[in-house]
Image (tube, rainbow, N blue to C red):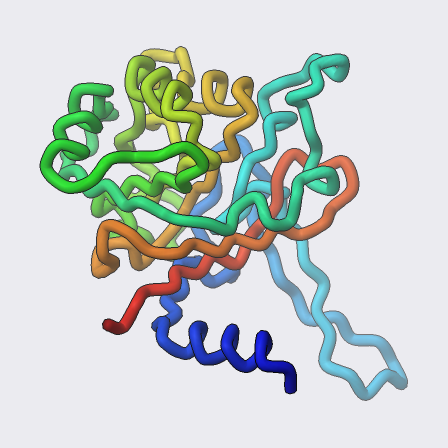
Length: 242
């Protein structure tokens, strides 16, 4: 084993891995207009293997959105599809901003809220992966109807999105079903239109953010799906054990 590989493995072993990914399973919450997740046993006579058939949308569970999810102009160079995304695009320094708890009333946070958080803790930098912990992950339930997780969740305001774009961050994530509040901040959907139109990836349905420190390494690996507007990801946090 080379010295470089040995050093890399030694460095990795100094971090704790925290899984930020939702389990994909039947009756999991999905966005109301999206395909429901379904996993059924696939029986093939004469085949001894255990197999399943799976039905789902490309924005199911813990997933990311490409710019193509909302940007439909195919001539726009920012509009990239899932198979065109750099596989390392969601690997980097993550900053977790905690806000709330919020009632189920479509709350939004502002640029001023983010700036105050920076003043209290640390500044966002270019190419950061910014993750918002609203405490909403605790509401997750396998009951897809009348599910508190899917009721009036919080999100970003228009000026918060503009602020993040100005910071030139790489990706923005949330522990809610959408980066926008449930009503899209009055139907404007600034998170999707603003971030994606600026080439900033969006990550949704994260979990286990609450116990993490404010700064860590994030790894989110997308599936390489031809012409998809997003895909499920396996999201991990690497936290220093020092």
